[in-house]
Image (spheres, rainbow, N blue to C red):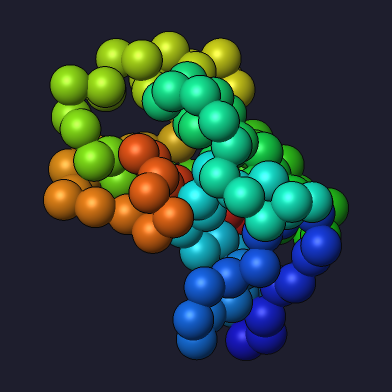
Length: 124
């Protein structure tokens, strides 16, 4: 197993990696809607935040020459499940058939005041 590191995604919070790989599997740590250039949460609502999370997941995968189409499973954390449809609209624009398996979890709060956070498992 080894860590994946890229400047194209935000630095991880705390004792964490942006991602790791073990054999054919790649695990992308939950990505916040943080712009890696500024280190700040992106402005806007759930749509903009979802798009940024997905771009950050994509940036970690690209370090291994993988893309969103290599993802087999995602977990989406939302602070407001009433925003599921708006998140899903943006999510659906980026993931194409066959779409990965997905779990969506409602949480009380996320770091950086984010409304969404997305983690992924990919397979090489």
